Image 1: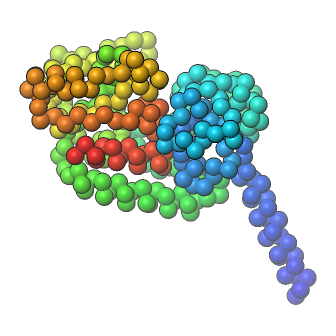
Image 2 (image 1 turned 90 degrees about the vertical axis):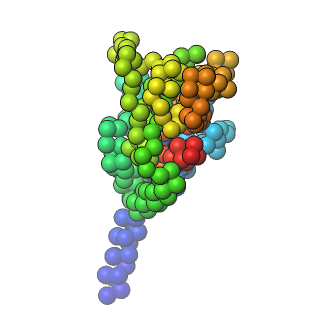
Image 3 (image 1 turned 90 degrees about the horizontal axis):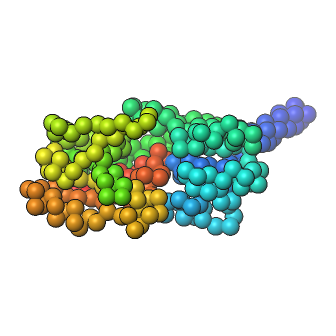
Length: 286
């Protein structure tokens, strides 16, 4: 009986050690959403490098010498990533053009997902990360907690609220699409007025808006994401006070204007922490 117990115990120890070895990684995460999900799941010890130059303030704990700086979210430093000796590199759509080069350093996972069914696909990604690193229960608990907190925020906002979200870039406003506002928080997008056209530039399409367009859309709240600030061009930042004055002058005095955290919205997102922080900002406008 003793021999059998020793054999079983040894097998369990070996299995445990193998499981720990299998989940241990040296991760370079160019994707801030994945970085904050890994952090929330207690996996920050496996992070070795991050793009510090556009690091959002809510991830400031990674702005230390402990982590290698691999550039910014768009202009990545592949050489620096190599010096970190990664075993896993996480990317988003911004770094997709560098995927082949990065694969020469380590295995690469593209963390982009289809946002048309945001909750479903976001939750699936969190659960997959939990499974990959053997913290499935933590992932499920974190998702359940997030859903509960989001429900509380939605209750404070109330039903039938309409919004317009614009991205500002060097004096220009264009419609932005962030699923946290409509799919997660349940706000309704205001209809686009007649005469407003979507334009194409290469493979990208965008819909320019003027203050007059926004007043015609008559939202309860106008959310603003300032790209100029997000990409470290404060000299091109939107004059929010001037925009508010224009809206009032054009008849939009009842439109609430909410300036969203540019690093959180334009640079980050799609993580356990960032989704909650974005939802809080959506609700705070009310």
